[in-house]
Amino acid sequence: MLACVTSCALIGLEGATIEVEVDIAPGLPKVTIVGLPDAAIREAGERVRSAIVNSGYHFPGTRLTISLAPADLRKEGPAYDLPIALAILAATRQIPSDSLNKCLVVGELGLDGSVRHINGVLPMAALAAARGLETLYVPQSDAPEAALVEKINVLPVESLNAIVAHLSGLLPIRRFESTIGFDDETVEAPSTTDFAEIRGQEHVKRALEVAAAGGHNVLMSGPPGAGKTLLARAMPSILPRLTLSEALDITRIYSVGDLLHTSGSGLPLIRQRPFRAPHHTISHAGLVGGGRWPRPGEISLAHRGLLFLDELPEFDPRTLEVLRQPLEDHVVTISRAQGSLTFPANFMLVAALNPCPCGYYGHPTIECTCSSALIARYQHRISGPLLDRIDIHVQVPPVDFDKLTDERQGEPSKTIRARVEAARQRQTKRFQAHAHVTCNADMGVAEVREFCGVDSSGRALLKAAMRQLQLSARAYHRILKLARTVADLAASPRIETVHLAEAIQYRPRQQN
Image 1 (cartoon, one colour):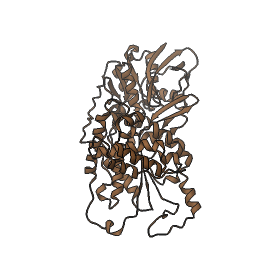
Image 2: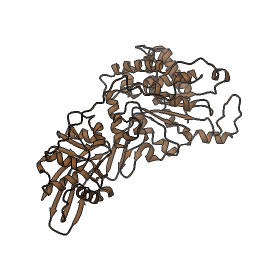
Image 3: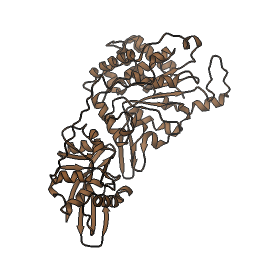
Image 4: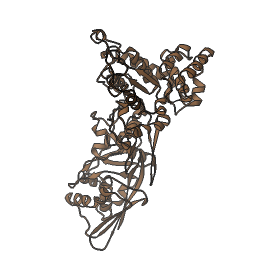
């Protein structure tokens, strides 16, 4: 007796169809699972046996061979429990075998027959819709996530008994209807800090506004307690709201990383731009992704959002260097012997550092206790090529007493965000014919040449800046992109000399 149920595997952020075949043959009782399963799948035989028996059905006392095809694709996780159980019940004629046609089934089984949450349901649902499958059976807790994909019937399964009754025509399961809308008025994220609460640092706030408007990378340098971390953590309050397509891209990543149910929002759709702030002890795999079964790292979890690296020189230099390629290409490719996986990594990098180990090098009132050699060694922990990929370098000086005790509030984040979103709308209109470009920071050389033209006075200013600051060709293009953002904030159709001057002031002298 033979039965087959369609299920799904995760390959990076994409789903892959898996055929779960069950063959029942005479012989001593034994369950054999083939098709490159991991330990969780090899243990599925005992979970499925207990779930079937405890749900009141018959588990065959003969030889069972369970094949997960294609056989050369590695499989992991407990998502195959439910399709295996249904294939066994279909093979033993306890449910109609044709009831599982054009269906995709995923879910982990408890020993009592309950169906439990699994990760990666969103890309699985997308695969089912792309393959033209009519019905998707998922754990009840994952139904809201699966329903984000249109053109497929999502049926939430609470237990093995419930789905067997449905397939037998006794008690149909109602289709899950998504009630989650995407209203722009509801996606604004509450921020822990408003820019109005930050005293002083007006020039730093301006730099962060420019960065948010164009998606540029920022490096803040200053003594301890000057407000670098506070400014970075307030930055999500001025970032533009997510579009629906961006929200779905982020949700897919968090679904594979199994982070949707721990986000605290209780919603299956990510509604605010990610803010990731890993500790400086993070490993290489934790930052860029990896592992035996590659998973997204922090730079992918920050996709379309913000990655904050505090105390930048304290990170392992070898770990930091892997940021070079993602900062340029906005993707990260992880290669293993079995193949390569590509994860999206289009994020804004916001970094903070002290000028020296004690933190007071260049402080106006506190004397630095570090030697020149120690300062040089500390500063050279961050390579020149990495610094060259950061658009905005800004000094964060200590705040004096008068500004700190001033009762007058600064400009609120809501007002700044309105200017940022207006600038982004201009960019969206400009890049309508360039699908791969969403903001000024995404522009390549061709787009810079097309949209970032300057007049003769601007070229003279750029020539002087290139010579005096010893800027690289990459820095030249980044200055033009930054100037385009400054012009967008000023609602200027052309890049003026004043816009170039502001962009140039954010560039440091090229390190050798």
